[in-house]
Image (cartoon, rainbow, N blue to C red):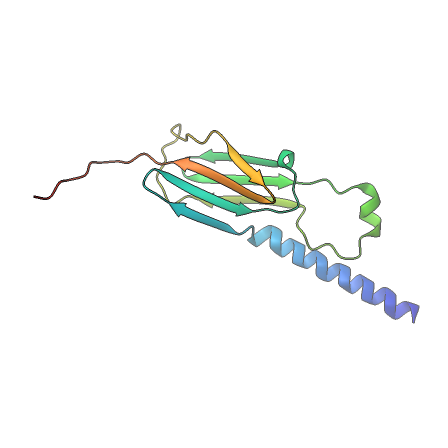
Length: 130
């Protein structure tokens, strides 16, 4: 019976690892809201500390990198680990920003949700219809 239990534990570990790898590759989930003067980007990355997250923006590409340390004692006792340890995501923003004009100075990370507000400059002018 010990062999079956050991095989089941190994199988659960492998399923957890594949699930975590999928999450790290495909996700995190992102919502974007465009108003007249700003683009709000909301990203779910629970389980990370604020210090573990690095953001950068270059033209209209937002880069998100997050990496958390796993304590040595947890590495050997984990049965199933599906939550991601690493996030490396690049997101194309639906607005046109020229290199050097990126004016995002800060972001807010609260309860696993990262919120970034990108100011949008209006190009062109409105035409009045008479």
